[in-house]
Image 1: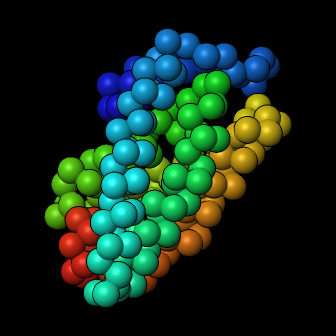
Image 2 (image 1 turned 45 degrees about the vertical axis):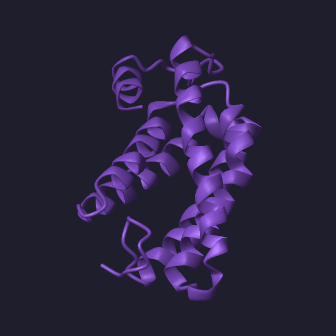
Length: 162
């Protein structure tokens, strides 16, 4: 994902005058998103199986997984992944790989806001599938991420606070 994000960052096209088109890189990135969905599906069942020790952090992660899985079809069927969408997905993976480096959360939040800014600009704000993607992104931030932040949950889903 990181390589796709870097390539897309340096090979951006100006879609303000034309409609976004699909490139081979978009298809590679789409395939790279599938393992995340498998992970979320399995992890959702694990959280639900341990409902007896359910915490606010568990609720936040469960909420995050459900919103992500519900929006997965919309994301995977986008014709083009702009760099401002690719980079937060990549950073999310870094958060999972390095859960103790909590300063990365702030970079992730900045990248999410950058994603919002990109989705409200032309031509993406004029395309229904990207407007829907913006709604999914806003739901992820306004719901699960606020629950996780408010409760100082760690990135490792071990139920402990930071």
